[in-house]
Image 1 (tube, rainbow, N blue to C red):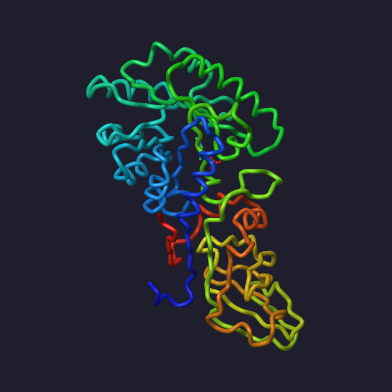
Image 2: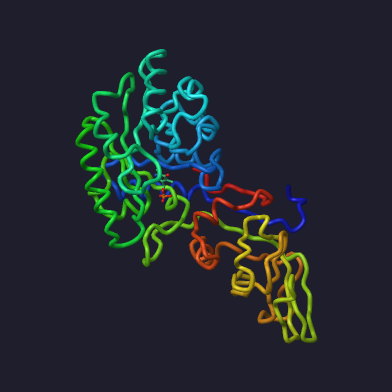
Length: 361
Ligand SMILES: *Cc1c(COP(=O)(O)O)cnc(C)c1O
């Protein structure tokens, strides 16, 4: 892979992910700490991330789609894999692999119960919608369910917070109240409400299992406070070409970026096709030789242009390393500068990067 001229290098620190998991587990001391690894572990590679989390002590993994569960089922016999979107179109495959669907509709409950009658009672989780109006049984459906579970071995009841990252939002305590009503109906089963930000709302929100995703991968779970998590991702790329612009001129598509000249423009082989947000045209930054430099002009499909005029002459050459994530540029900052969130940045990280996983225990 080292022959890929100018390609970006994406470094994923598995040691930092493991340390983040341990920190989150310690922040919810009475609860099990699971790990959402949906969307290929938030874009960072489930095949590498899941074993690292397992070695850190994680035994409960959450994915969105059945296919994602089947892809990681080899992790270990004592790990549980939950599928948030339910049993899917081939529920027998999940049953045969011992994968646990999170049931969100009464139809899914009867499907899984029927399968349990055939093969012997099968484990399942239940998702109850406490105010997000997205996924899960509604409150009335859940309230009528105890005693009607049929041949299901219920191991977990969960709900998901809509506003855990918004301090003081009134929906959060309302969801907690509703979830408490639900947990009372299913005693003797593990209960789970908190995502990353939910853990930091305090012990009332921890129940028996917490499900932090974003914070594992270095995203700040605390609004308006310093990020307590270790950074996980570093994205660098070598300069492909350096160009001096002497007369007043423009840079890039649309001739949108004017330079008075003399200016020095460094071109890097990363673009929006690599998940680098096009919205950062004219407003993103990179770090070159320890200094922040602005992105000049639009982001192209495969290229970015940086204005490195402020750096000492001759200090930026073809091959000079440019840091796009890392050295103080974090995914949260990148997300908000692009009008989105860190989650979106991570899950779009491109397939053309040379990926390296470091820090494996
Ligand atoms: C994605 C997801 C999580 C993790 O949320 P973060 O905000 O990434 O911590 C937890 N629970 C459910 C149901 C999810 O879909």
